[in-house]
Image 1 (cartoon, rainbow over the protein chains, first blue to last red):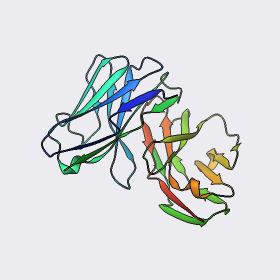
Image 2: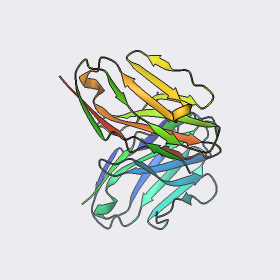
Image 3: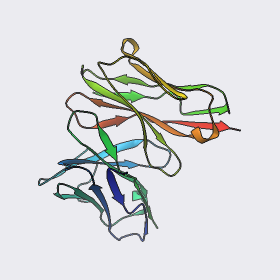
Length: 116
Length: 114
């Protein structure tokens, strides 16, 4: 069964609204989760690293005020796209590792966001 | 810096043909992991293989095989007797050293025609 669960799988919203995407680790406690973004026909790019109990670390060029990340528990990280615009339409996917530096990675199912 | 290059953007083959997807990586670390993922149109990433830098043995899993060569920094993926269901985008990825950040190649879109 799934080790990482991501919800919702698809969301359509109007421009200016905020959208929350959840990523849950079902099988183990995840102190670190990763959020990736994939534009159509492009590769996956790391947006930010979510750390339980502390602030997320954002990659260069990713607006922290635009993409709010909360990792309040060891099994849940959320990504909120604030005041979404059509250019934010993308596929967002989270991942985590069971144990750091083992390469044992697990990905969520992904969330396809469409902003009208 | 870590980098993954998948030079083939798109490949189109006819069913039952063999096809090889190329992957070249760059890292200064001696400890790293290489991955291949399949991404069908639904978007979900399907894990295919993980290989650590200390294990250069080639691997075969059914119609899939992987050729890891540290001398050329390559980790190529071959599908034997391709099928229509193999049509997808395939990503090669690198997890290097102490970093927990996975670096993806740009992907190769494989189309297998009946």
